[in-house]
Picture 1 (cartoon, helix red, strand yellow):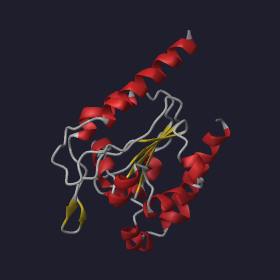
Picture 2 (tube, one colour):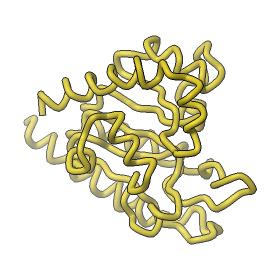
Picture 3 (cartoon, helix red, strand yellow):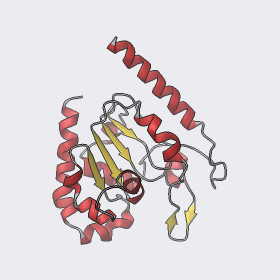
Picture 4 (cartoon, helix red, strand yellow):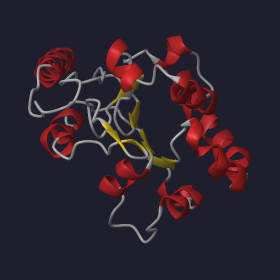
Length: 203
């Protein structure tokens, strides 16, 4: 029975991801809709970031940019490991490139998460650690907590274990934040690598 149930879950997730990838809810996007995400039912770690940039939009490869390089360093994994959807599920707050604003990319489109996240999460039964990267993911999923700012949430990362870790976005633009908050790479990153390594041992 469990094998049949597993097959059913995989099929449901595959069909759902096909539906997401054909989504045209935001037809007014400057580069058009191109949802970027990946997942398999066996995934143990869920990565929830912001939204694809132009490079990721062009390639269709999530975190296929300098931010992704830094994120993989924080995780202590190779590209091959990171892009194993059977271990890492990648589901951003906005699935498509949102466009450019005055000071960088626009926020993720608000339609994506309430439309798709719950259904996707229901088909990822083995997730044991969720990484909430950046203010948009944290505001959506941690809005009921006592810590109201990104820095406060990330600084109190231990409060969210064992199943959640809030992270600052690994964008090169955040190098000043990292310089001002050396505890992040001194304390949080080693624990993050440990959490990932333990789960990788059991794959």
